[in-house]
Image 1 (tube, one colour):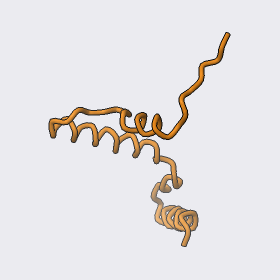
Image 2 (tube, rainbow, N blue to C red; image 1 turned 60 degrees about the vertical axis):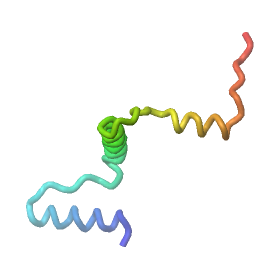
Image 3 (cartoon, rainbow, N blue to C red; image 1 turned 60 degrees about the horizontal axis):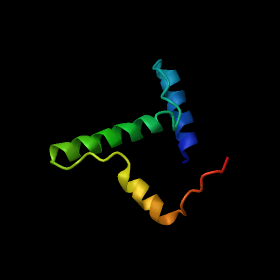
Image 4 (spheres, helix red, strand yellow; image 1 turned 30 degrees about the vertical axis):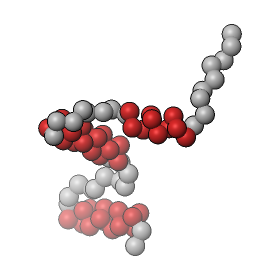
Length: 73
């Protein structure tokens, strides 16, 4: 069963039982990612490590991508 079929089934059941329909798939994905990042930063601080924002990602991308060229005016 696909996620769309499961959502339609859940919405149908909720309607039959007089309950509010569940949110559509993917509705709160970015909110969940933000909460996960905040939890990681919190755990890093509690463990005594620096709470890095994006330094690992930036360093990794800097290794993979060529340096950016600035346009000449």
